[in-house]
Length: 183
Image (cartoon, rainbow, N blue to C red; front, side, top):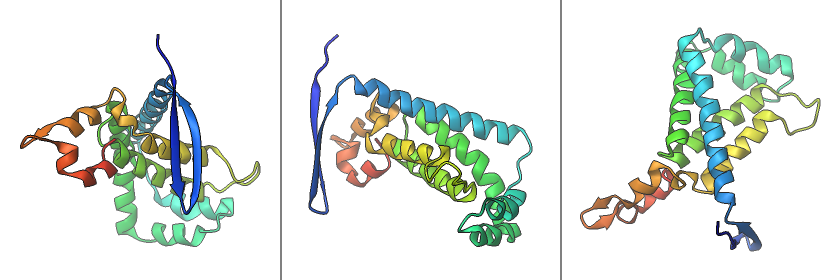
């Protein structure tokens, strides 16, 4: 088994952060992607097969939890059209996000929507009993890490999609904006 360290450097707003990443980290990045994929697929699949309704949660849970955006959730819950959309979008969104992560396809897109859903759950399940960090917040950051690491390139379909030949050019070179969706 061969392993080494890879130097990482990133500059944002004039601040540069550097670090070393052990090459064995690739397996942990893959594990994060698969863990989140399985968790979301299972959660969505259970909702698709069972009875899922968002109205009660939207209208009651955020206010009961003391969420600072409870009014936003109540406004969403008061629109029958929006509730009908959420009743479909949450279960099927979780299934599709899960499948995207499990197969490593459209990984950054899946991770973005997973992080967005977890942000909404974080705000709706507001509970500061143990501080600002809870499971929803941790899942949101895990989704963002999966996206940042380009985890779909690790034993995932994104690695193949990016290199697919389109007119003599790799797909990702022909369509560089797809780097925000693949990876």
